[in-house]
Length: 373
Image 1 (cartoon, rainbow, N blue to C red):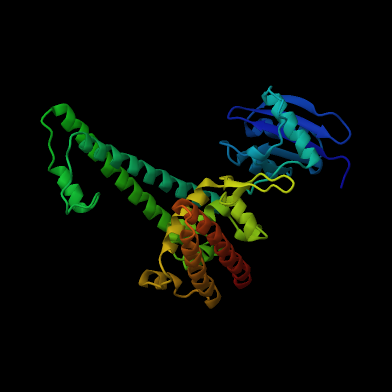
Image 2: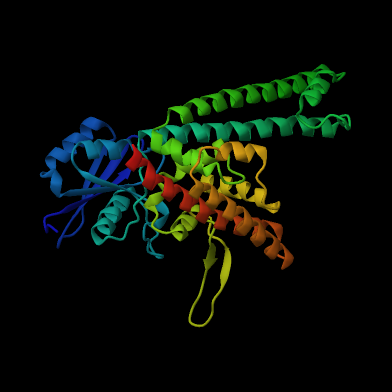
């Protein structure tokens, strides 16, 4: 390794970037502030000399990966850092942009930073659409809750044969009328928002279907293979692929379990071992869909018509993994429930083991598709 490497710490904000540099055997120096625009960044890189000797880093955040791609295009090796894993001193109570940049440069030189995966254009585009659909689903739920709580406050109950938010329930809402005009206007606005949220969700799901069909062949192959698992359909598979990226970047399924935040926390010392709640670190979007999929394994192993359709055309090795997952995860569910474990703990444990089968399927497909391409 060259002894002339220079490590750049960049504290990135919407308008400015604080810059610090660390060289081997020298103190960390602050280079001040520069505007957060491509021209200023390019000027900074020219002033720092040989680009092959530069190693830049900045924390992942709301500014995305624009700076990463710009520095990479300029020939500078850049790393995007996990903010929560940057080492901190317990007694350090002063935080400024300059000090943050210096800390990044110092830790980068020491090798104490954790690098995050940077998605390519295809993964980032699919991830943005999946998250937009997730936000639309949450907005639809809030809009429905406003309507139901308004009716509850006034003692209005839907008919027994009108299941909530079915077409019959929606037609029943159109028949309601409040005497005070103010309350009627409130109801009309709430119902309109429910319709608007439903139309928005439908548009996004149509766009998601088109995006999955237009995705690169390796991504489509992994998403199709993941749907052989019970509880995983297209939206869940797209969420997993867009949030995780290549599953083979994890050398062991336990690493993917840790990334999902479904592993238990631990505080052990000497002969004392104490494990607590799950860590909830890593990717919250991934953890949510895993917990939702885990509920499907409450039921005995079965290959229904919809699942058989999703498995059609998949390699025998993939369907065997999916069938093994049904038996193992359902058995795990029954044993934990029989031991008196609370239902949320049981489902979390099943979700954690489901990650192992997802990893096995993803790695198998990623090894085969490039060779066939």
